[in-house]
Length: 96
Image (cartoon, rainbow, N blue to C red; front, top):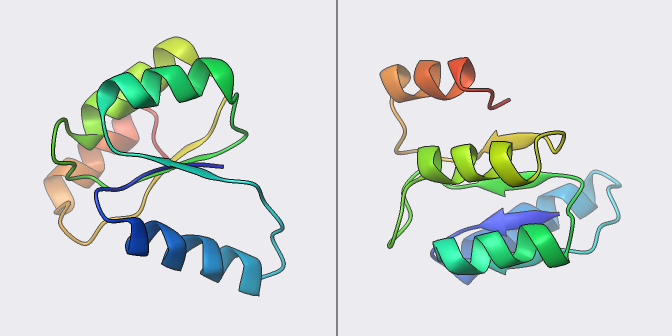
């Protein structure tokens, strides 16, 4: 599991929720585009969870990078700041 979050506590909440549902996972949290690219190559996650708003790049950019470097890895947005228009755009670009 690879998480893109700008606040570590939010990532920990997501992981805690998954574990409470019986999902046992190893995870990494990254905040920047270079760290995301590196994690995709080195870590090879089976799932990517991302906030839509990131401090140094945005969720749609992360989605495009994931499609380039890990096209078979499901990409899910966890965000309260996305809005309906952006959510539709993300779905059209391949997010779950």
